Image (cartoon, rainbow, N blue to C red):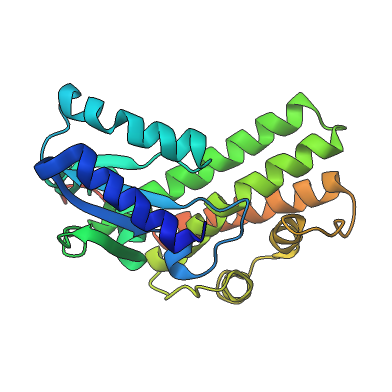
Length: 246
């Protein structure tokens, strides 16, 4: 089944299952941006409901099981409109990403006008970068000689890393390119970062063999992310980005 037909089937089933409780169905992420890379990229859906009470979630359970288990897709996010507005401070990266690349499949346009606090966005970007670095280090420590496992870790990490690279540029007031190759070119030019490791990991997601050992690529990838995090921290010191200015 073609993706568009599958999405329309999801919407029809969601409307039937949720009834008047369903306010909106939103497609967002790489599918909308046009840089999706199956099988690594997910089809990301957001359900906006009037109530997320247990009884209402129960009505959606069969739909989500069909979508995630039967169609092998990522489970949709479920929010109320109020929750989305009130979560903009803690989900600043996610909400801004949705706003910049989304399509309403059903119902009202809700997310476009939610204000995102860019001071907290910058803090979250750094937090997520440092979290990715720690996870990559942990994976390497568990098996530095397991080349196949390390390759899988790198390939799976790149979608999240590409999102954080875009948001690093946004935090530093640059408009990121949608194309990932151009994005890496921007990172290299604007942040003065050696992107060899990032480029190699992007190639790992293809069918070809890596240029160099996976361990070497892993090290260069980590080094690039560490340098980017330092650049972000120095460009926008945290003392200037408090919730309440003193």
